[in-house]
Image (cartoon, rainbow, N blue to C red; front, side):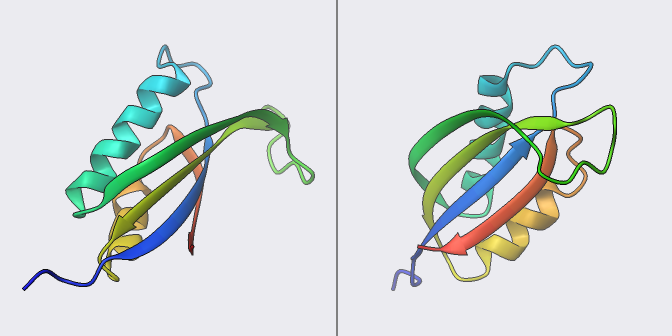
Length: 98
């Protein structure tokens, strides 16, 4: 019996300051993390660079926003956030049910 899959939309703010990784390379890494928590990516949308409304770090006033739609088991969002928590290339993560 296949476990229940739910649809999610995750928004990521990428931080590639001082790194040679392109946003596309960071996105590929995130897709691998989604696959590691038994998720299947259905769509990726690069929203481009945007300035933050509230700046918490004067040296980082804006970031690249990416939305990824995927389906995964119900426990996957928490597992994904935990996997990305220590990733220096991901500034913020927001996962919502779609």
